[in-house]
Length: 136
Image (cartoon, rainbow, N blue to C red; front, side, top):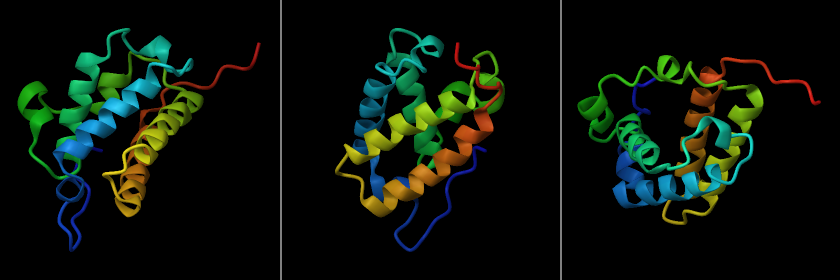
């Protein structure tokens, strides 16, 4: 799940988006995460380090420099997320935050946003490790 997204004629998705737009996306994304009631229980109150790790991961995942690997080792995404209860509803909420952030980052083209969202949708499904709780 950590191999970079494939190249096309315009280069890697990282090349097309660029580091500044990717950083803006991550900042916007975590502003939404901080407001999402389904997600706040599994994230720290201070999202600074989380956002830094996400940016490093996405940089390599999208075909840029392998920053996450260099700083933290292999991402082992599923293993690193197992301590947190990630339900299908939380995966959908995470994706909704990403979708909103993509819409609100005009530096990322619609085509590149769709490609990134599709790739992250596959990752989100892979992270699910618990069932949704029935409504009380």
